[in-house]
Length: 187
Image 1 (cartoon, rainbow, N blue to C red):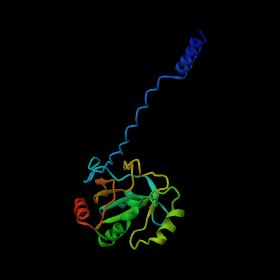
Image 2: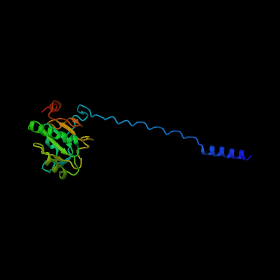
Image 3: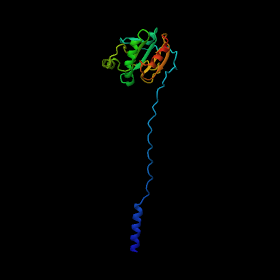
Image 4: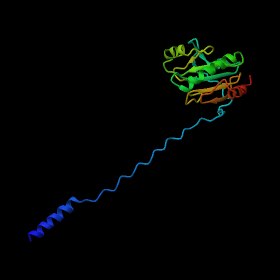
């Protein structure tokens, strides 16, 4: 009897310590990197014919001004910021375009930094522009009427102040693609 009790206790101890193994945790599925969304290759024509916004910003002299007052010559408006790498990349080609097309095309670069001249002036002292003088839009007043959700955004207007196209990406403004696009302003 003693043996049976001992055997029973041993069996119970063995069974008590035994438990069902938990189901293995499901393995994590590999995370797929997001597919980069490329901006459209061509210009956005959805607001073609829309007038230049009449919002007030600061011109290159720091005075209140409106881009809508610049009618008479085709106008290329580029929104940029000092923290925007693609913006910085294209600034020299915009400067060269402004010099090359002087009298035929106005090129205005509008800085969207909230701190305005405080950050833009030292930034440009390190990267001087020969032709362009930046305008300031510290309140992002142009972003909404231009439907600019990213920087850089560039908009071309005809001489009568009507939008021709908008591009929301950087470009080489000295290349053949830019020349073909700018020719659409009609001079």
